[in-house]
Length: 141
Image 1: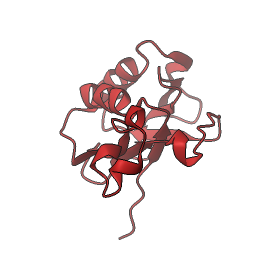
Image 2: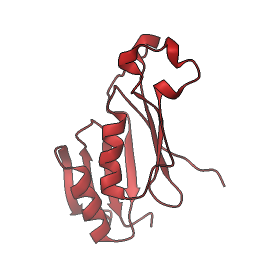
Image 3: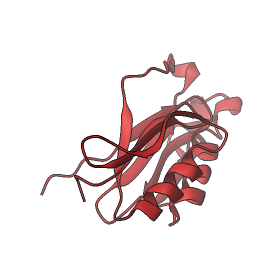
Image 4: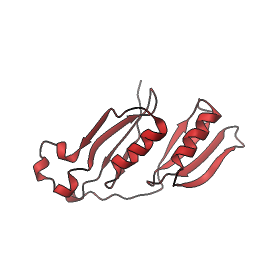
């Protein structure tokens, strides 16, 4: 079975963002490595050594949310855009509301959780880190 795991990039906020996501979804990190842990860490500027090289948080038994911070000294530039959402399909309306309310804290609600014409309970938001989420209960249980 093929799996797909969302991978996010941040500009120095990956650890803060993933601690926030951990508070919403629960669970424990599978991995949290810093740039300073890399084999050639002595070549990384001191102000970038605490950036996240890789973090992984299981969301459920099939999905792992992953991320890293960009490394400005290597020419990485974060470009935030609206070309991606992470869609979460829940097993209940209550779970949909819990996740939506957690993720929308200090963020922007695009569409509040509502019953939609296609029969699902759905909402969308941008969290406080600029990541876009869709929360859905219905079609894809």
